[in-house]
Image 1 (tube, rainbow, N blue to C red):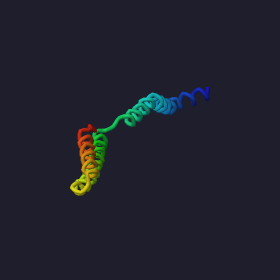
Image 2 (image 1 turned 180 degrees about the horizontal axis):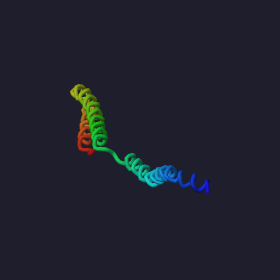
Image 3 (image 1 turned 120 degrees about the horizontal axis):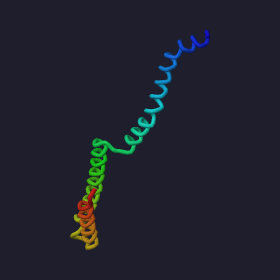
Image 4 (image 1 turned 135 degrees about the horizontal axis):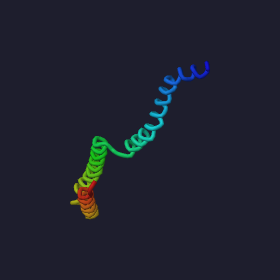
Amino acid sequence: MRNLVLTVAMLPLLSGCAVGLVKDVVTAPIKVGGAVVDAATTSQSEADEKRGRQLRQQEERIGKLMRKRDKFARDCPESETACIKAGELEAQIQEERSRGI
């Protein structure tokens, strides 16, 4: 009889633990799913940063090609090869500009 009274007296304490445990078990898949979605998606600011980085890299490539083209264009009056190379570089510049990011 004494054990029964003790067990009944402890039930409210155990039910709190059980409720907390059940809550943790039920919400765990949702929390994990939310973390996976967060890891798989990109925020707008991350997308903007990536786009800006790509634009800067494209501008760097174009700038490098333009400097080479200008160097060959300066040598163009003396060398036909330099004129041809300058024309090829101009085509590469136009191709880089038209390439979508």
